Length: 151
Image (cartoon, rainbow, N blue to C red; front, side):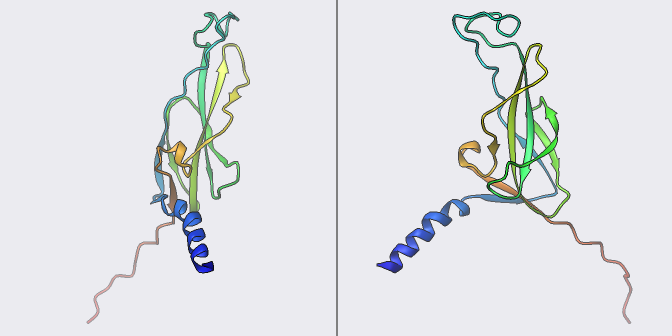
């Protein structure tokens, strides 16, 4: 009975890790779904941010992309904030990476953005349409040299 419990415990905790796909690459293009501007309160007009009660706020959405090598850190920024919904990422250091994206809204006339409460991460099933993934990068070996014919 104890052995069965141990086997079941291993399967329960190891199964999510086995469901993740790893891609080996030195460059990947990460893409994500666009985020909509927040909606203004139905009974309040607050120009210039909310000219129409119940309508979309006025401003811009930007995104910040992150990478991390573990499951718990906040990640390291990759480049600056962008408005596009994809980014070409070039990896330069050996390792395994999870990629993440955070949305930031800049309301009209504001210089400080409001960040999304959480980041979407590539290792989280809910953030990847149930297809979690990571990226592995290993430096390529040097090219062979000293070619010669052996008699």
